[in-house]
Each structure stands twice: as C-alpha cells, then as structure tokens.
Length: 353
View 1 (cartoon, rainbow, N blue to C red):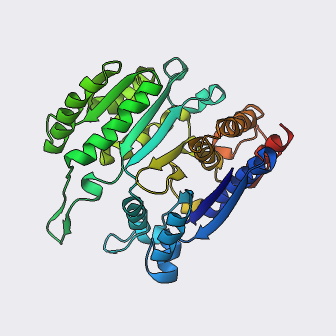
View 2 (view 1 turned 180 degrees about the vertical axis):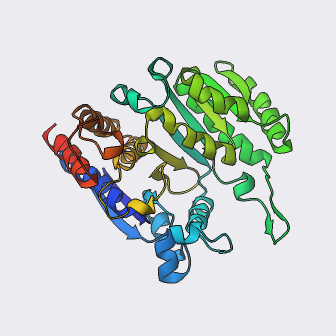
View 3 (view 1 turned 45 degrees about the horizontal axis):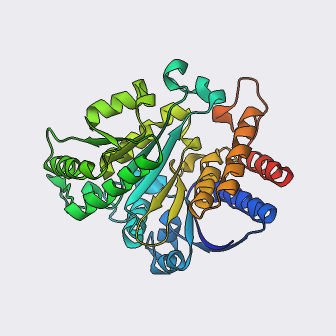
C-alpha cells in the first residue's frame, strides 16, 4: 500500500517521539512491502515563532494533501504562564480539528499486565480492563462563544442536533463491533446541552436494540472508570468531559506515555498520543515514545493494515516484557533506556520478526 502521511512534530518532546514513530512505520513499510511518503509541516509554538500562527495555511494544505496526519504534541511554558496571550499553541490544535472536521476522538484504554504495579489502583480492579472513550471534538465550550475582561469571562457550551447525532452514531456502531455496551456520559441534571445529548441518545438507541445503552453523570463516570473500569466497553461524551476523562484514565495504564488516539471526521484522519508536549523534558531522551508508536499502529489499522498494526503492538508488548522501558515505567533496578533506545529496540524487533 502507498500512503502519504503528513508529519507534525509540534513542540517539546514532539520531535523526539515522532522520530521513533516514523522509524517504526518505516520498519513496517520495509518488512511488509508498503510505501509511506512523508511531508513535514510546522504547528504549535514552533509555528507561532516562525509565522505567528499555530496552524498556518501551509500546514493545513499539507494535511489536506495527505492520506493521514501523524501528530505529536504542542505546548510551551512561555504560553502556559501568561494568561493574557491571545494566541497559544493549543489554539492551533483546535483550528486543525475544526478545519479538518475531526469530530470523533477515539481513545482506547487497556491494561498491560506487566505494568499493573505502576498504576495507583489495585490489580484486581484493573486486570482485563479494555474500553474506548469516544470524545466529541469540535463542539462544546472549546469552540463556543468566548469573552474575557478583568471582571467577567465566559465560554458557551453549545451543541447542535447534527453534531450530537453524528458522534452518537459512531459510538453505537463502535459498540456493535465490540461488546455491544454503550455508556453515554453527560451532566443532564444541570446542563441544558447535556439534556439534549441524552434526549437524542434515547431516540437513537431504538435503532440499535442489540446495544445495551446506559447513561451516567460525569461525576459518577469519573469515579467508576477508576473503581470499576471493566464495567465499560464504549464511552461517548462531549468535548470537555472527554478531555478530562481520558487524561484520568492514564491511572489505569500507569502512564500517559502509553495511550494512543485517533481523530476521525470529514477530511484527513489524525493519529496522536494522548499526552502533551512535556517541554521540561525536551531534548533529554527521557520521553516515552510508546504512545506515538501505538498511534502509528492505529494509523495502519485505519487503512486496513491489521497484521501490520498487530506486529507493532506485539513489538511494544515485547519491549515492555523485556523491560526495555523509559524511566517512568521501568522496574526498580532496571537498565536505563531513553526515547531513542526504546524506539530502536522496537524497530529491530519488527525487522527480525
């Protein structure tokens, strides 16, 4: 298969983990007879420094020409610590999602048996947990009308019926391919937008009688993903709740460095790790590249390359079992491996598989 892939390294640890992600894709291409063509573009703080725009038109054109976008992370401490700045690296990420029509963010959550001890949660709660959080990505407070002065600020949480229907459709269809259990997470006891979500979900569940559909307030869901993670199969929720909920689930895997994601919609699909840019660690060979590499596996699987994606996952699991791990998940007394060393080990595993 021939694929054109847009490469957006972004900021902080982005270039380091992206280098390993691309190396793994190259190893797969060589091993399995595929051809991946890459085109690199700037975004985030790097793009602001270059042209004053965190998602310039030139980058959008690269993304639109590609079959897939392989993205790392954006964010810089210079912007985090100044709330008065009108342009931030993260606004470029929001612009990219909006312009590419990426309304469905898919975040798998699964445990690795060899890393259960790294989670603050009890093994017996975690073992066997395997669910997906489906987050609506282009509506809600992140994109609603905003205002701020010295005395007042607001963000409007607005959703339309078509926006809700299309993400729920993805949720129901995803549940049909898994364990046929969909949990709609909202705050319908307080928020009008959530009540519309629940109303539409109740209308649509009649079209999917095979799916067990339940409804849960975000307060309860935030607790139960940690205390009963095996209860869930597919969770679908709005933008803000999904953002927080998926970061919380890093407690299940033991590290945000293990969580990949994809964002799907109207135009080019995007594949990225869940974690941020960790600017404090940039250039230090400390960052865990596995989420980036696993996002590459999701990219391969999206285009029907199931065996190739499975080989990447096998290589990642083998690296963990061999204790080839970055410091935050390494066993006590284990050998020190950095970003480059973990990536190289996985590439070598694939080449020799």
